[in-house]
Length: 365
Image (cartoon, rainbow, N blue to C red):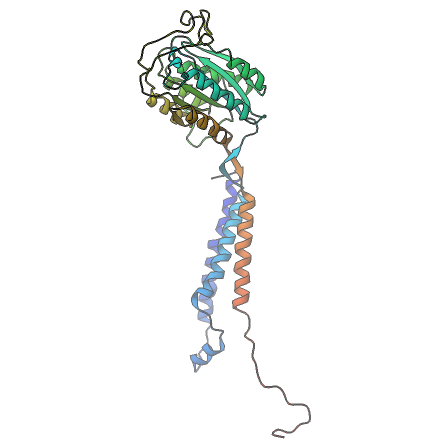
């Protein structure tokens, strides 16, 4: 909670001042008290009220004054609100191990199918960018709402050697910086110090889908610090099982001049039966440092579910929202309730007596 006009909190002093004035008046009343012969007569004349009925209206009225005084300072709360200018950079691992067949027909085929579904199901107003990475990372499509361009780019993905997770994050940051002036490119020195844990996040988000660990280029932890310094969340997905399986690449997944020009020779290649292990510790650290989340998917439906759930998390970002109106409403309600209860409980009792005799009549007649 923060306040736009913190100096206005001085109005809170009204409550202790009122309490002090009430105490002083009660003290004066005691000095001016008169002596009566029978206290019982005085008690009988007063309306019967328990102590809590005397205190509740006062407390409600004072709480209302506190809320109204707080509203004068224009309080702001950090709330998760929908972002209407969200962009998502989807970074897909196209290393050779993505041809592993532990998830049929192979990991790359399943991952690209899930990515296509994700693109089709995402709201039309959300911009999506596509990054592919193996030994190096490259931006295939900058953030755009053109779903056809994204789907066409996914069809061109080819496998290559190496896994540069850190470089994929940096490439995604630079792609975001091109369209968001609030985000600095990776070559810009931001000085020392990362943002506080309560700082706002940019509406732009990076999603990294990989089946292995970083083997070349920038360390993912270093890239995560760069993203955190720019208030960009990174969601990471570890895809694949621990079951040994062959690596079988179809002809359209591998070529001599693959995406980065360094892929395995020929199509329909076969590899050994040992999978590259997912570095869950590194992926979890990247997500934690940047304010994102790490997900594990070991089947096609699990990956589809993860991607389907992401927009609900990505579409929300923290923003300082003024909540003055709620303070005013709460204060007014409490104050009026206190006054209303005081009037109701202190109303004069109705005295029911005998009907007056008609004029001119004699008593007893």
